[in-house]
Length: 219
Length: 299
Image (tube, rainbow over the protein chains, first blue to last red):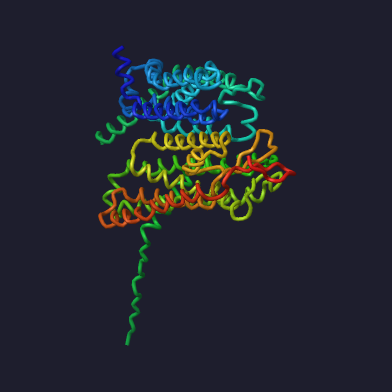
């Protein structure tokens, strides 16, 4: 427990909390008015905010030191998954709120909100192999994927990212879309967690740096 | 007698540091892979949307607004924040902070130019079903709608990004601000569909840096023109751009410049409020529905 507390200390907490609060605000407004408006379109923005929040869970400002410690990638990723709790709990609260305020099915909405947070976390996990603070790197692809891509007609006609009240809507349902995304995310997490590339990369850099230093001092 | 020819030393023309900095910032922007992705995405999205029949003229405008304006805001915010990392070196140069901020603001001309090209491409390529797809707008109002939806967000978004980047150091603030604005615009647009004649909804819809003025049915069989004056909304957007520039320049401004900027704010804020009031009170007094083949009628 103490190890987890140490490992999650460096997560981008201000970003996670800030983005989660923004998601709660946007999602809450979207669901409050969903009944009157007949659509929960602003939920796209809330999804992107939750996904971006998930992306900041793997920030490591002191990567130069941490990557050389014997902490395995699996341990680090598992511990940092705890930082996903604020966006996930917010997602659950929004789903519960949806059952009361709008006609959207709570289960579908839970899958959507869960999927978006995991998508952000996974993209950050993949980016963390090369970047020490992947949150900012992940934020823009996530926004492009979740908010902007559905605006393109060809994608919008075939893929739904937000649950609809119309069960007969053509194209891939939001459940199927996010189930596919989550399966791909879990696979990517397993693959990246199983090889400690960042440890090897840092070790090679450090060894090369030390060798250069010794060489310069010797001569 | 010998004659000595002395060549006068070549004078080195000193270039205004503002233009030099602007050149560097433009180079940094166009080398940014994110900006290239956004521009490419914008071109594809316009191609995709214009290659099919358009039932509502407004639907094209939101693409450059989100991509060049919204994503441009994030890119400019990070471009501005990236100078914090080299602050130790930059702060000892004789170039003052407002000059560096002005250079960043001038860089916004690049997404603005892309948006102008997008507008030209949209006007040339698209094939709308008929003039009814514009609602009841014609002439100046139609031009104002197009400029306010396609061109001005690409200027205002980056300028707001510079202002945010100057006043905050957290990288997450840019995306959060963009998505909050997106959420707000989507929400009020949905409300406008349901309550086209509501005064509070009109006030909310136009209290945004981007607004739609028409809405259409799912099957594209009618277009509803909403209340509000597009020309006054355009002026409101220009005022918001000016406010963003002033907010960015206020950061670390010397006392004289600060006083001038505050005086400018005394003019700009009432002007912005006036434009907003005109946008809300002007234009149609109630929503009008246009069905092809029929005369426009109140919604």
